[in-house]
Image (cartoon, rainbow, N blue to C red; front, top):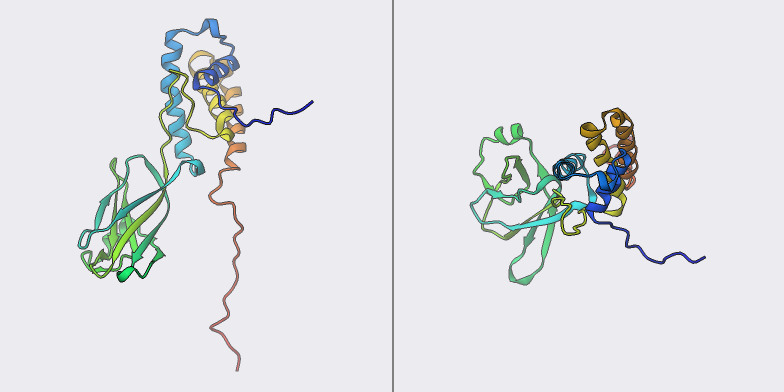
Length: 233
């Protein structure tokens, strides 16, 4: 027997929700408007939880901002949850190309400890202020010697979940069971308290499996001593 040859499994959120209800013994004909209202809120709260359990590799995007000479602070998208890395692109005059340089983060205390916050030069560090509308501040403050572009590789909030109009989830294939089992756990809290512990265990197992595939860059780390500054007479 031949396999399907397709890779299209991505049911609508409403279909996945029916599966979640089935796991706690509530069949489709028994689902009420109250069930659906609770489920839509819980579905989005589940995605808040998933978003906080970073990294979510599929949600990364590159935010760019051309820097203005003398301006230190810039707005970041409110959908930002975490920063993976930041680098500065410096464009050389006369069409001679550009160079990318990694920038280093400063804690709030590190930034506050800078005695000359208005010092100008080539930005080397940044401080992110995690407000509801987050901002990022350059140090030193960009000067006018070159054209600088800030590049923020960020992990973003996933799109809202809805069970209307056949909408699918903004989640990859590997996280669909996490959503279904997480919803079964959350709905058990409301409608099947005797199953809450079992459904939580299901959810934790599904999360552990999926999270193994979303490690923050699955590459080997090599640590070794540098003896270049040592010699023997």
